[in-house]
Amino acid sequence: MIRNKILYSTAIVAVLATGGALAAHITEIGQKGKVFSLEEISIPAGSVIRVVNDDNVLHSLILNSPDGQRANLGTEKPGEHMDITIAQVGEYTARCGIHPTMKLVVHAR
Ligand SMILES: [Cu+2]
Image (tube, rainbow, N blue to C red; front, side, top):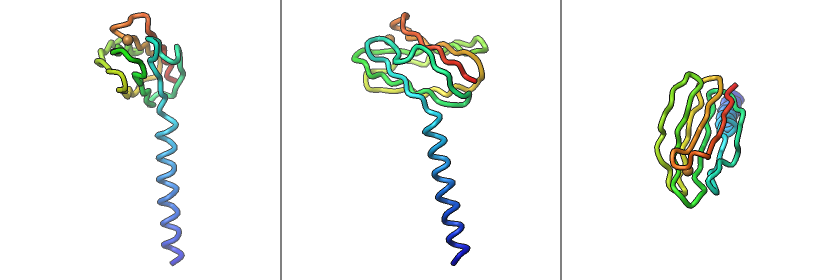
């Protein structure tokens, strides 16, 4: 009986720890009014940026990575979002291919 209780408690703690870690590593960025909701962010490498199109126009995302690679991540309709994993340490730049003045700098540490 005591053994069962201990196992049960350990399982709950593991679930909470995982849930907490996921929540802590997603940074949400909006795109309302043809601007990113933040111009610059600093996040741990390996975490996720959720780019939410909370605007009323179509946006796209182009991501420049610290290693010089450039990726066209496609378009987002109003109400859609895109999750981007920021894997490497260094500076990333995200831009909208439709509205080139939209710029977000991501420092991954
Ligand atoms: Cu745009």
